[in-house]
Length: 189
Image 1 (cartoon, rainbow, N blue to C red):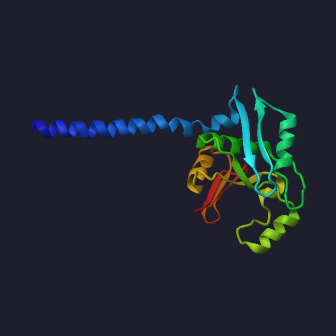
Image 2 (cartoon, one colour):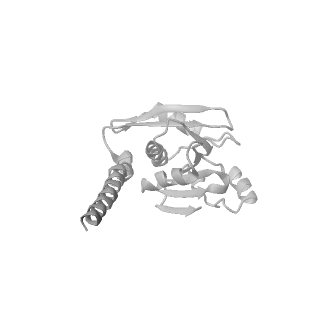
């Protein structure tokens, strides 16, 4: 009888330790929104484009202020690479990308597949795929499609969703995640 009781306590203790480990790990995700509104932090964006060969790795926000020249470089980097059109990228989108990247805890930059899309590019992509929205937030500079080679689509999407700050689409078949600063919602597999 004593042996059974010790075994039950051991099992409970083990389960309790496991639960404590999960709770300890959870604050990283629960504090995701802090990256978007928190004061006193530094925001850094790291991306590359296989299409243009360009890379960006810069601090664009310090102590509550966006750095104008850095933000301009981000706008240029996230341009429509097909037409070379540059559009203002909504700063909330950049912040969501940064917050999700921080949660992934990787040094590897995002691979940017699509940032701003001109109406011409969006129409062309829409004619080739059902998955391209007619009024895509890419047209407004409010969305990005990204990939992190060392993380799965699910991992990247979970990190983006943890930010609770916009739309997150999983495109597992094409190996990328869509993030935008629109309404909070999720879709895809």
